Amino acid sequence: MNRRWPVSLFLLLLPPAAPAVAPSCQLDKLPVGEQKLGPWIDKRNWLDIENQRLTLQSATTFMPAWRIAPATDRTSAPLASRSLEDLPAVDPLDGKARNLGFLLDSRLAADGIVVLRNGQIVAERYRNGLLHDRPRPLFEATRPLLNLLGAISISQGKLAADKSVSRYIPTFAASASLRKISIQRLLDDNEHRAWSPEEIATWRQAGGWTEGWGDKGVRTWIAQPNRWDKPLAGPDTGAEATPEDDLLAWVLTESNGRPLARLFCEQLLLPARPEHEALWLSDAEGVELANGLALSPRDFAKLGQLLVEARGNRKRTRIPTWFIETLLASSGIRAGDIKGLAKGSELRYGFVHLGGTPNRVALIGTHGTSLYLDFDKRLVIASFASYPQAHTPAMQALLEQVWHSVERGLKPARTR
Image 1 (cartoon, rainbow, N blue to C red):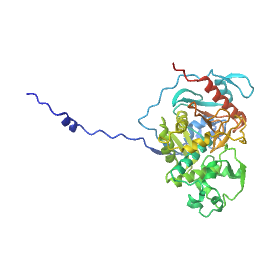
Image 2 (image 1 turned 135 degrees about the horizontal axis):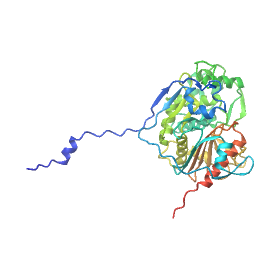
Image 3 (image 1 turned 45 degrees about the horizontal axis):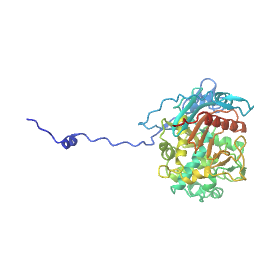
Image 4 (image 1 turned 180 degrees about the horizontal axis):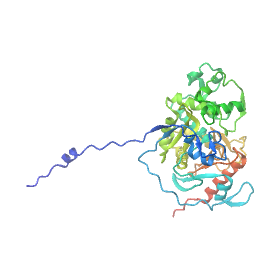
């Protein structure tokens, strides 16, 4: 005699399915390494430009860091097969016709470049040991991302643009100088104090970038009495790192009630759907340094894609619409120029609004590490470079030519 059991009974007997686990920001503390790489490179010279193409791929040898683990449910896409080598380009240094590979290798000293169109990797190129999944420090190119986190904090009510820095850091409650610095002025990122070379050197020592400060940490340096009692140095190019960077990092941490690495992960990294681990270098006390973010080339590009997608997409992004519109707004007739870039280029929140073709924005680091965004064409170009000079017109002209070469040479296929 056949007996048929009700399907509902079988379903009741099955074990309950495990709930879907949402990606989270898992942070692991990494101790400092041996602080020595080979017989010639140590803590004294690891940041010399001649060594950076080697040392930046092993930053945790010289600095402690927080590791942001990648999501376990995401696999890395295969390497893009489209070549960038022979794309036509014009060398801005002599005006001669070259190819893009020559500019990247011989002029810009670029070790990695990733190109996204409509969120898809269409081309990538790596040199000198840099891999698509290896995080490399952004250094000064981190600061615009901190300004973006500040804008998000304002939109979420964690910061008020017109309030002073001292309101958010109890240590500075009695500082008359910091009461004069509003959150808006800090995020504008176009001025800094008249720091002496000696002060910049000890600030860097306090962060652990170089030897000599001990284990006191960067916040001890920032909070020293009368530290901020000095005049402004005039207009800032936005290129070089200054103590204002770590001041902003402290404000973000206090106002949001969480470490900087976790704040970045929750607000920007996870929404960008990263493929690989990220690092945030810290001082000896474990405090994340304002210029310590390290990303893989692909995940750097994905951050750019997140900004592109934020335009007009209020429901799926934490990035305020007003921030994107400020970056894209047309330059006025009195807009200042940035040498090496198209006329009408100007700094906005640490990003560069590019002149010429509308709706183009760039994030440019001191030695050529950059992120290029064309919002209309949904084109993102991320590059890691070690240009031998710091933020020169020639470097910026080279970047502009690289962007043009990629844009012309990798046009999307026409659909019938």
